[in-house]
Image 1 (spheres, rainbow, N blue to C red):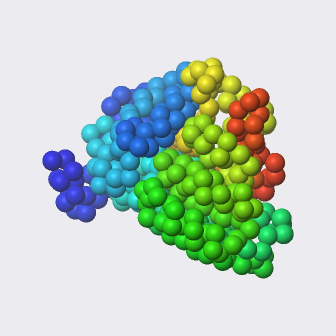
Image 2 (image 1 turned 45 degrees about the vertical axis):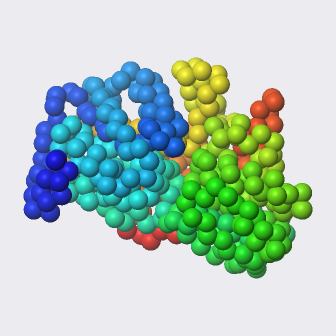
Image 3 (image 1 turned 90 degrees about the vertical axis):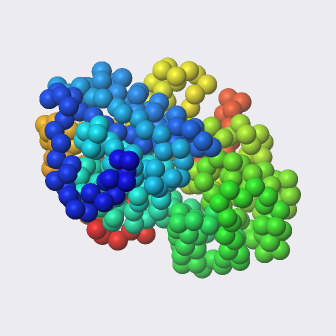
Length: 392
């Protein structure tokens, strides 16, 4: 009922509808919208664990203010549900900030809520370039496909490769992955010998593997959502013998740490590009991973969702500091632009023009360390901006 009412009330009432004071003068509420159920529930778990770790490290407070986290389950890629939850968090739960949102459609669905309520929303994972242009109150604590595919294409060309096949999931981030790698690789005088677009949730990749074989590339660059589709693609690549034929596989987040045991030896040697690896050796990352395992168990490893959630809290805390805990979206956004800190992922800055992160991108190889497969970084492309985004 609330959602139906707000669907009509938002255009009429605008921002005034959201002018609701906090429940308690010294309590600041933060909403987290993530997939706590369904096939991507591991992402929700990682987001919650990292959020709670940051909160515990700060004794549940930001300065003199008590922090209350309100978690809401979007269940997966459900834009209508995401918008409803964002509206409820603002109007009913009186949150001052929101984070979460693993998928591009869910991130886009909350943009109007952010604008009308003037509530900053920090996107955890959705990786399509241009999302932040939909509202001046959107930030991103993750990365974009352009940001990771561009250095990966450059690295591939540096290995002397001339022929690459592209295999991507057929939705907006997949389109970005294909376009960004293709642009960068062809600028390095390379050739794209196949462009395969695979429907979301594909489980049988036999036809695609045959097309890759026929194209005879030196490398295949894949992009799928992390989870069942990624696992099935990589296993098919090995089972069909493409790795034995000399074709090398490239990826980004598909080999995230919680999925590596699912691959067994199939993922060994895969090269990926990403802004984070728990195997990174910086002091900040060693401390982060150690604290994460101390709190949740030595068998638990943070991933890209974890680091995004952890850094989203860092960003929100800075906005709380700058506003003195008051609800002032404009002042909060002005303060976060240009903000820099040393994250476990490396040095980061919020670009004042685009509101995207400027951050290191690491080329990583899946190797065994102490008997366990990890994404081991071996080359760094420093201070990468999203080359696919326009100034907003």
